[in-house]
Length: 240
Ligand code: ADP
Ligand code: MG
Image 1 (cartoon, protein in one colour):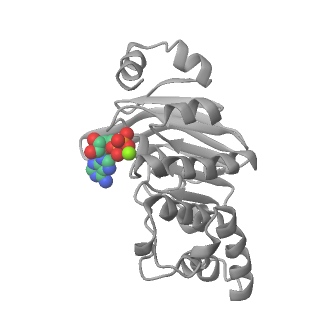
Image 2 (cartoon, rainbow, N blue to C red):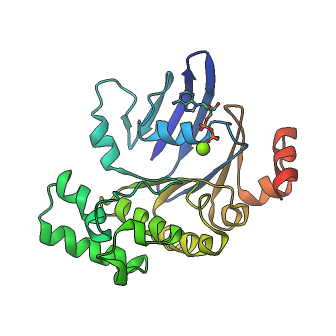
Image 3 (cartoon, protein in one colour):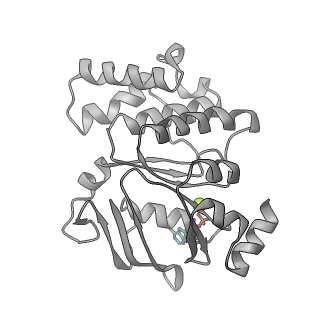
């Protein structure tokens, strides 16, 4: 479903991704881990063209999205993204946040967008907050709205960039539980996370990035118990 071939990204002289290649199958859940500054966010942002790779190709469903002729908005319609800091529209209620893009981008009728949004808001456990503004929500609630908002566009792929890193500890579980429900639906997911227990439990595969390079890639059991590289061993020793 996603194929990255030799992705390199430079910011000026700073080489942030170095020849990263991987393939992600439909329904697969991939956790991207690695030290701060290793290029995890940049990799994720390349997958939906929030960043254009300096070189290399990305294919989504047999379409080379890195081709300059590609319509970036069309690509992003297929790919939902959830950020560390939620990025909700502050002047819109929960319901308005979730209906906005389907109405604006997909030209859905209000009544249909609202019916769909209400279902999604219920799924993330926030039916009682439908008409609340983001400033009145906890971090965990905001992130659950952000997930519902991304799902409202009916994406084929969901990208998560440290979705629980900005949350107070007691709110991490409610967000991870929503993500687990999504895993159970068969969604293709790429998740940058520092939640190693979560990665071990739900990921089909771990990508370990270090200094812009894909240093290791493998199933969680093997990666966590027998990391191959010293970089991965050092990283795991620091955080586990
Ligand atoms: P991670 O998510 O693993 O912490 P990032 O992908 O955010 O890493 O960043 C990798 C490197 O790229 C860092 O050195 C960061 O400063 C640099 N970087 C990221 N985005 C930009 C940008 N828009 N302009 C310049 N440098 C950037
Ligand atoms: Mg990051």
